[in-house]
Image 1 (cartoon, helix red, strand yellow):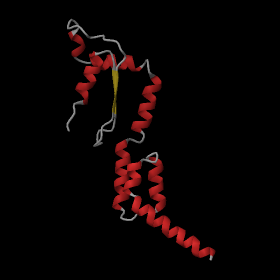
Image 2 (image 1 turned 60 degrees about the horizontal axis):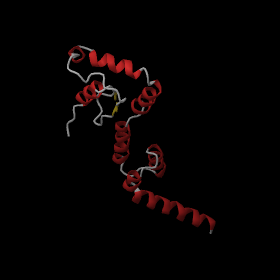
Image 3 (image 1 turned 45 degrees about the horizontal axis):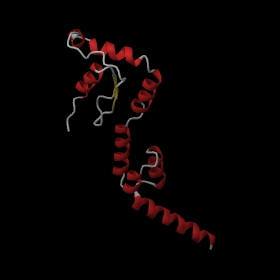
Image 4 (image 1 turned 60 degrees about the vertical axis):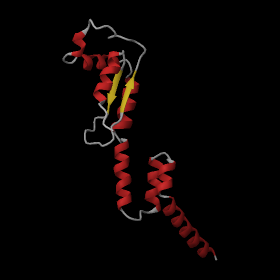
Length: 141
């Protein structure tokens, strides 16, 4: 589904909030953060200048300055390694054919042990764990 995140951001700004956007333009999965502050700065139609030029951008910048920790956390978590980066990495692992158990466990850790990721690789995990257990069992006897 096509979504105009800029329009949503303008609406949020017009309602006294601000927006944070993913800076990765090539990403197929866009992540945005819209924060409503409970203030309604642009509720009347008399301030039309805010809709022209950089009015919304400057209001967003001013409001973001009040929340530096939120902005830093958003940019560190989304722009340093975004959900799109995770999906690209997962796709590369699937293209590998039969990835190692170590690779799958690393992906699970990165996904914070997501059950959907585990479910995708469950057969591979079960078979490789079973093989390792058999090898260890034969070493002991």
